[in-house]
Length: 282
Image (cartoon, rainbow, N blue to C red):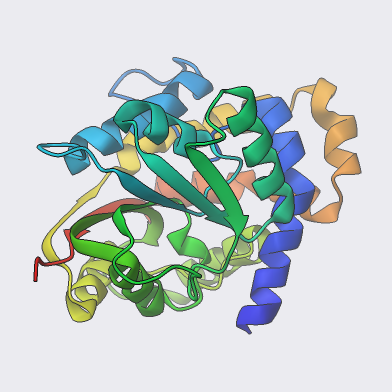
């Protein structure tokens, strides 16, 4: 299943990333909105999300990370922000060769080609030695992982003792789900190439199992939900219709499925979780 799923994810992002960058820019993730700030601008909100995650995770306090892994890096939006913010060496991985190439082009154009590198790799079987990074950053990639425990175990393995994992991911609400809710989630899985999502408390439990300590978690669903209204509005702009059609059925299907996410947030079924943890010092 993993191989077939990985191919679906690769094909989806190979086909859709160019259009996403053209319409929505380099940040392939939610935006963050303070109460009453809906409509402040999608790209500004996406940058704000990175800033807020860094702030909440207390990343760089007291010691800035020097070796960062951006796990599920997209076209390198977060990677370049992290490199600039901390002066760190950043390695980004993605399943999409198209994304990896475009991310490297963007790093070169920004003057960061010696500081930021990208490669195609599977997050469940990473080609890095143990104890390599002092920060593993995963911004909206955990939902794609077919084995959440193995995902966190690999993060733990490649972290240096004392290193931090910062996972920001789609979740579902706490408690047992109704058949109707399960059907709604399955539609989201089908559209966005997801195997399944879990609750935030389940992520915490798995992080404890693989050995993380100093675990913190929070739910930002209300802060990010307005993002989908803005994405839907921009997707209806006729200027992008030709590019959407050229990108193929998978991308078109994802655009048609935007309402699934909006309704999922509105009902409380879809949640947006943050998890921070540390690999204990030896």
